[in-house]
Image (tube, rainbow, N blue to C red):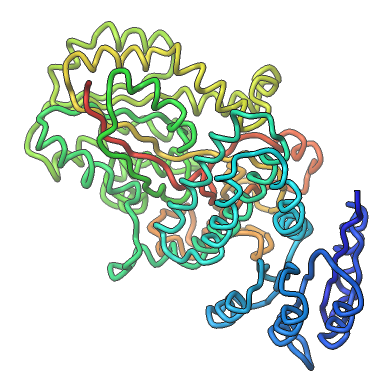
Length: 517
């Protein structure tokens, strides 16, 4: 196979030696230039498969160099590397037909992803796959580069999920690898979007605020309850959108989809925060302020979601006329069977609320048990195991029996999960929270470029354990690791499924309305 050749242009090229060595070890030939004039001459003298181009250089700057390279060779992929995310610079670069852009500081994985997308993709797309995905690949890449609204990211995630399910059926590992790379690219873009916009959602003047955890009952459940008279609300903990789409065909024998919507889990994308916010109809900071006896702080002993029924009762009192409701939480098969056996008693209520915890239990068991790790070694296997559970679960039995009564059904979740593989070092004291996708503490030490940091929790309506508490959130497929026993914990947590941070998989989750057939 021909060795792929890369031209890297940067006026500080000597500082990039580690990245260049990394690529050379991966089998790429890397030629360097320290200014635009030299780069243009090199492109005229020989062929390259790809160009990395610094945007800010003395003399002929990156955009001018880009134009001259494209005039000479219009088809060569050019990846712009910039220190700025200013829209006018990006618009001009995209208008000049860059194929991708990266924000400094870049890391080797970002560089490799960009190469895979712009070089290896072209080779792999020529191999056996559906012609539809071949055409949609570039469309999705364009959407990722131009997305600036919440609904843009919903559309992107739906497309990626569709192809994840379609390509997962076949055995084209090369194409699945390309799709995986494209999801990584999308998560990097989505993380930038969240960093820039999430805090603004809590400003009453925000025009791009999506439906979030606090609005599920007010905007989805209560209006349908008023119209239909009876509603069953099922929350399947940790149910990602792709997992939901996998089980829909099994449900449609009994219920048909009336409406499916993607909403956004609040941060942290963890049960204590997201699910309590949903049942209370309030952000965690407001729960702590208004109902201090119903909020259990991270430093306190005891379960963090043992008062959901009380929070829901308060929300019903605020927004709905007096109704009969029943709340059930199912943590094991015995409780699931009891739920099915007592369904006639449940049907006497106006609102039935059932929480199923199996998927969350499965993801945690995968971290802790070698057997489950073997059964769910990657995302495709994890999805298959979840689907197998659902096919034989008391939840499906419950849905089957419920359909006989004609009760309207709403199915949703509180957050999703992502498979993590990139460790990020964080130092904190003993009271720092233990979740590896987010941390809250008063003495956190970290690289701010690697996290989404919130130094004033009140800005995003989160409580704080101390007056100087800071929250940090992991992005993409990162996970937080303390320097102590670093390698041991990296090996333990790498490739496990986690939640609490920022990713499409964790934050963009389904809420669906179904009618009995």
